[in-house]
Image (cartoon, rainbow, N blue to C red; front, side, top):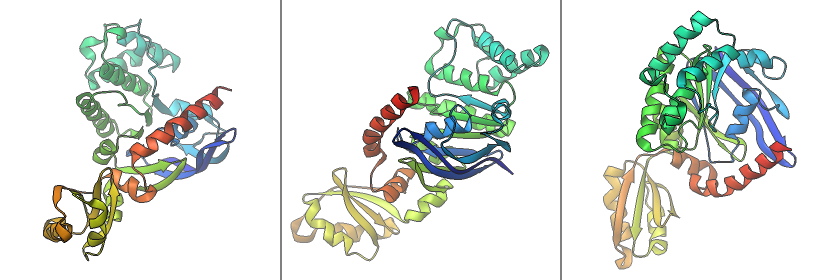
Length: 328
């Protein structure tokens, strides 16, 4: 059964098309990652699915409810953690949770029980009476997730939940997210531009760029599509050695990227010697060499021809434009 079904969903802001005919489906109980640089259309897609924004075209259903014709049913069945914090810092964690439960008309006895249960789940039970302004960034994110689950939604939207957090806190937060997915069977849709994060934790991912989904599958299947290991080589003359590498039978592709030659290679451990020999043509020396398995960053590069860092630079301007148009 699909918890979320999206068909050619589109959103325009004036002349800017932020989301362009996006389609995907998410099975119940799965963790689904919507990946891409800032300005790619991730948050806009989430805003439409949560009924914050009306789509320009296309259709979508969340828990079998139509986002256009049944927005109230959609909202009652989902939880959402926005990219920007929405907690009241002058209230305690318990008070923030209690206010949310009242807004969703959760009966008092059930509300009190669920508050304790959710705070325990995210490791904040012992800080329930503390003001939110005394919380760290990671604690606030955990509280927002707990609050989003209080009314027992079956689908949880997380918009860049680890943005701005240090790596250790990000890892801890993901531990809580995977635990609630496993224990509560909540379907989770997360937007992120941290490729390694989604690679490790999502059951399925869709990579979005310039408002379009360019690839969608399990992380393992996406990495298999580009084939082989990735070898980064630096030499005393990268441009001159590149043709020698491209001619090797085991090499699936080679290009200059980020000050090094990036080589896609079948069974790198068996063919590294050939690469070094080829680099040694005409006295050219290897100055560094590193081997790594394909990542979702490599998948992004494969489908777009650019790294996500390069997309970030152009995406920020698109995002600023969309926000200006959104406010009109």
